[in-house]
Image (cartoon, rainbow, N blue to C red; front, side):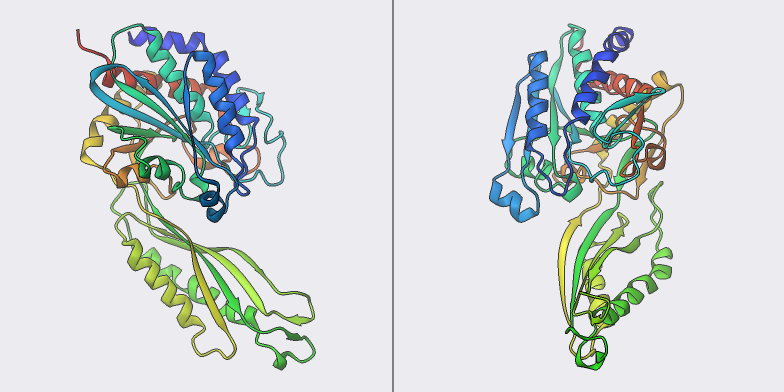
Length: 409
């Protein structure tokens, strides 16, 4: 059966690549996050396989309050005979905006020298194709299966996943036994960092540049905060995780906006910061520490007022004992397809797979991609995926589904 499944994927690989091109060509820049049209496209595409995609639209008011425009999450249920587990395959369709510097059109799905180029070619629209064709290959065998597969295509990972997998779980629309979420082909991610993002608004008072004493300089106060944040980095380096692939916590300010003109004392500065937490840290305690660090930096500075708004608190993904079987089967099948042992590791990134873990559902990240994030240009110009990695990942996921769902005898 294994040879049949891999042969089917080879025979239909051109069709899989064509699907990926269609999935890449519908923009889903987040922000602004108008992602319902992409879900509609995917739902229409899978009708060709006789599949029905349930459309679960998040209420508009909730989406707008979240800072996005539209979210429709999809569940495609493929139930088989009773008596087996349900495995969910989750990929997200929202993406960071393309930015500048592209050689290829970011929404072109151009193929060149064995690579496909486009925003989300590697993270994670590629795994829409991986997972759809893995399930199609499994079902094409014509053997008796027990349990079921669910395809979860969600649309707010870049904002933290609360209205993607979080919405599906909160509304009790799904409760799988295992989850495979989008990842790369040469390792299995079983743990990832937590992430805290804050928006810090420093309020001062504008004044004429020739008479700066008439104002209260918000940028000068912001500089004190910056020094406090970056002054903490040596201490964070001393904290080490025991999870392979994860090192130390990190912290940075990724964006600063402020001031009105060259000759005006800045009356307001807004900064957005990111604090990554290793799985061993307590997110609640870390947030309290960071807020105190910021507040203490400007304590007593005349005319300065602070607002600190939480943008995101993403918890860590931690391995669950029940997930060991999933990891072992993925590793076994990767060995047969790739000819090498692939490790199970942690990653300093964060993903919405953690939301399944928070509900006690074993989740791992595995899909199509290179050995490392930098190789794929993920979130940068000319994001790309080696098509052979897509082919291999599809085979590995399909074989793993077969291991879990094939009825004995």
